[in-house]
Image (cartoon, rainbow, N blue to C red; front, side, top):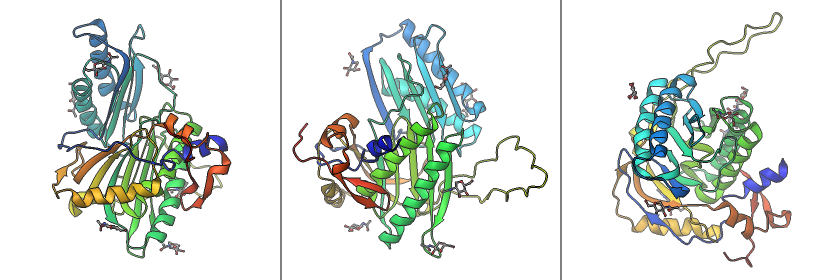
Length: 365
Ligand SMILES: *[C@@H]1O[C@H](CO)[C@@H](O)[C@H](O)[C@H]1NC(C)=O
Ligand SMILES: *[C@@H]1O[C@H](CO)[C@@H](O)[C@H](O)[C@H]1NC(C)=O
Ligand SMILES: *[C@@H]1O[C@H](CO)[C@@H](O)[C@H](O)[C@H]1NC(C)=O
Ligand SMILES: *[C@@H]1O[C@H](CO)[C@@H](O)[C@H](O)[C@H]1NC(C)=O
Ligand SMILES: *[C@@H]1O[C@H](CO)[C@@H](O)[C@H](O)[C@H]1NC(C)=O
Ligand SMILES: *[C@@H]1O[C@H](CO)[C@@H](O)[C@H](O)[C@H]1NC(C)=O
């Protein structure tokens, strides 16, 4: 378990160099993540296409009434599919998001036999191969709120506490979802949300989230907000409320005699604070290459400074403003090579978010 966590822990931190940064502008209806793949392509009007269309319809109609998650396959197992809404989304929001995904995934990944499409509020994924219960972290992407926290030391420490607590809670809950807050200053709290796809085991969920959390110091240290996501898990934090309270489970067990019932769950209503404060957000895609982590922020900052301050709303039902969008794809296999299978000797020290690793200088991919 620890080995696995260590493995994932370095996922984002061990990057030595960034080779490719691509810029893209996002329109309001754009997804935050699109991965088109597959060993072969299907042809138009094929049986596969009609199977895929019916699968996508079934996912969009079933997930909202099934607690925001549904996985299924066509009767003859030609296509497997999974849909999940962010745990704080209502069935109506979930339905709208997945309806949008069903058509977007076809237009964004035409004729592909495998695809992942994520809006901030929902995830849709299909493949001609069975992928349920399998961790998929090789394409992790990041959206950063570029505003700085005032006291970065305290901020990072509290953020690490919050996210690690949420990761543990999500991995122990059947919903694979957790949201929560922590104090940062007397007046400002940090708000976090984590989620794994519900087909994952608790330990795989924890591995996925731990890996993403371990990437935070490298990508997002002191930043007021960030989102990290891959096909298996999603995490987001902000210094203003951005999530909705989740309704308690339908039938809570009756309190046992002799025991005091737990305090009711906080039901504070959170609006999307980012709608108001026009925060600036940047997307990174990390390419499968070697990079010195320390340079990441430096490069990114130079990049941001040069960018025209063009603001484009971000999609997925989120009205956040983004300044520019750069995408960085982390390749898990490449990272493993670069860090010599994440050996203990490469461990640099423990930061507020967990162990920090360095990548071996001698390996070039
Ligand atoms: C499938 O089609 C896309 C373009 O639509 C192409 O980029 C990709 O290489 C094709 N994949 C295969 C396996 O032929
Ligand atoms: C959905 O995923 C779960 C967990 O992997 C699996 O046990 C189940 O068989 C899947 N459902 C379908 C219809 O394949
Ligand atoms: C999603 O699509 C289905 C079928 O097309 C429709 O019945 C449903 O009302 C749609 N949901 C939303 C929220 O638009
Ligand atoms: C955040 O701080 C860095 C230096 O640590 C600075 O270069 C950057 O401009 C700041 N960003 C904002 C949005 O204030
Ligand atoms: C995790 O769950 C426990 C028990 O429900 C709760 O007290 C704690 O605040 C949660 N942690 C976070 C970070 O929300
Ligand atoms: C958060 O609250 C706890 C207990 O209320 C307090 O001990 C701690 O100093 C606070 N932390 C910050 C960063 O304000």
